[in-house]
Image 1: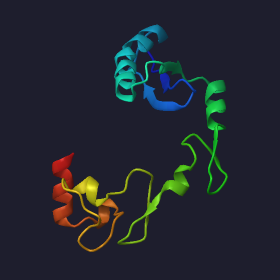
Image 2 (image 1 turned 60 degrees about the vertical axis):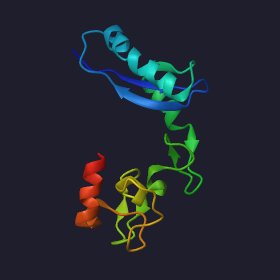
Image 3 (image 1 turned 180 degrees about the vertical axis):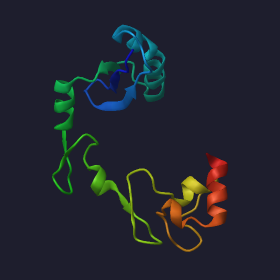
Image 4 (image 1 turned 135 degrees about the vertical axis):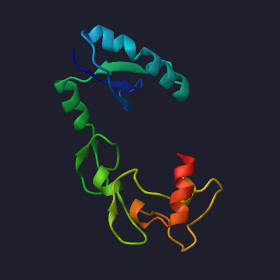
Length: 140
């Protein structure tokens, strides 16, 4: 029994989603188990040509060299900006918040807000106020 890694790719070969299967005895069984996910992604993106591709060393090497960060020139799989350059600084404590882990007013509160009450916008988990933490937990 083993897990298999897959990409869902658009018609141009861009990675839409990275998947890891549950444990299966065969690669075919793992592939077939992910077909519903592929169909959901096709529906979400309105892209019937999206495909499911097994991650292989050669393909992974090709993907990893596909994009160059416009800020630092680092080769990456994210796109025009590498994860390090896409990270944000916490507006309250100046620590670096990893990509997609920042809290913004719109991810915390149900109503649209330009900023938190103190004027900050990108906030790390440690700097959320008790009220903001409760609001965020209610949204997850």
